[in-house]
Length: 284
Image (cartoon, rainbow, N blue to C red; front, side):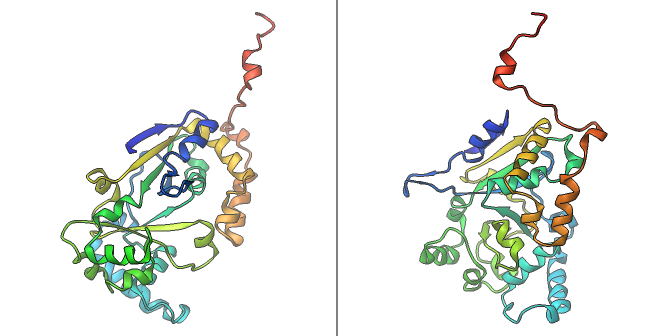
């Protein structure tokens, strides 16, 4: 897949598109090498919270002060900068990290979670994380090959670099890293979370993959399909109650689940079944 944008036509079509290119010939299994990120608006870009802050030079100050003021609340196990970076991202600090998931259905949840954007097309980005390994610095390539892995952990990164400046100096050319955050809480686990990180915080991964031999594609979710998708995800137990365990997630799910969209003129129209579509009206 080389940057193709696929416009979904129906729920049935969506099921096929979500698992494109998932067959692994070496394993003879359907084991996808893609990670997914859902966007509520197809016009949104893959910007990190640090990109949106517009001041990448503040990164070290943000992280330093986050560590300083949170020491009493954090386990002594958090000695790695990579664990700290993941923790900071998890709690909303602007960082160079970007959230992804192994699950296309969880990405679909985030594409349809905000009903105030149901008048806009949504989008899912999918990037082949295995392909990105070809552009890693030699030191990181050795580590990941020794582990027989495709995704880094904080511990693996810590064997090569103990700071963000050290990481960026490993290679002159820009490179991308995918790593799994520590299981901080049930939210990380239930969302099947993965982070991407660029060696240069000013570079967007979407721009980077376009200039490399890295497979990626985009799924466009038309606005008129969002309510059907949302309701079917809820029935499949993909919702805030599960993905954000706790009272906040429960309240968010209930507020959306019981919202009567008929009062706002936003309720989806019922689609005719194939039999109903073929049946002539009384006037025919």
